[in-house]
Length: 313
Image (cartoon, rainbow, N blue to C red; front, side):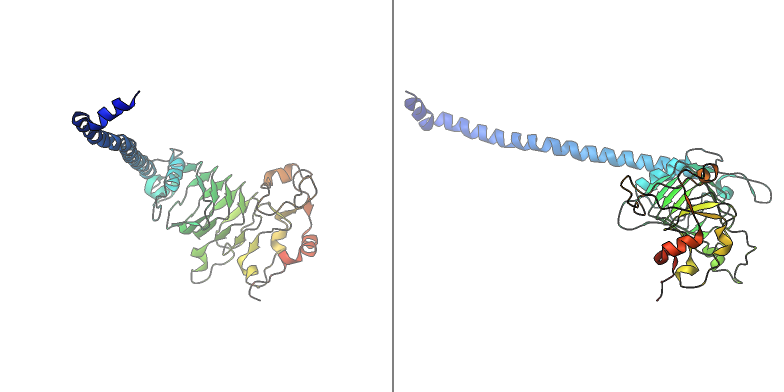
């Protein structure tokens, strides 16, 4: 029944012309239909780039504005970190941006609150030559960040959490208070490289009521001027101890409380790096709570691999 009609369309020159026109029109239409989402994606990407640039510019403006107190500079640093913007060489010191007296002393420090710098990559994020002297850094979180040749002179770190983080540079007068500094490295390179060598009377970085489990510290003089805490199988170690040199732990032992390693519900010891921070304040207020104190001699006997220096053998 339909064959004559089909033969008519096959042989009709008019309909052949119409078929060619449909094909000519249809191909560009298909191309346009395919281009439309690409076009929108390109312009969306351009909009995203413009928005990102505006966010970065705003963060820089907040950071470099002269203002003391808490004016959002901590969140601005977080923004630069998340956007992978270099912070090398930034001068965010009180002398540059805060209030100082006629003698150059900071009288109204800059507060950096809520900094969140956590890197989950395989290496560190390196920040070099940043100047945060005389600042208050509070409620901050750091992970796999390396501050190299930084100026932390007189900086007060309050209630921060640092894991696998390096603080190196100028730390004279710096204070770490009510914080957890876990498996990190702290070294006052300014004092270490100074000639003549620093004496024990130098004002150096100090730790006050911190969890210092697994942290290595360098040229800090006598940094333990208040009680601190660490797990008995993961103590803080002076750098010279790692280098197989004698270190007088005795003078520090009365100011570092060693705690029984925590166990899970099955009685297995929780691996290092997966443990909750020790509440150093809680240790002294509630000594029978999270921390069950371990004597130093007992810790050395029970965990000889941790307490016997083997580096360099």
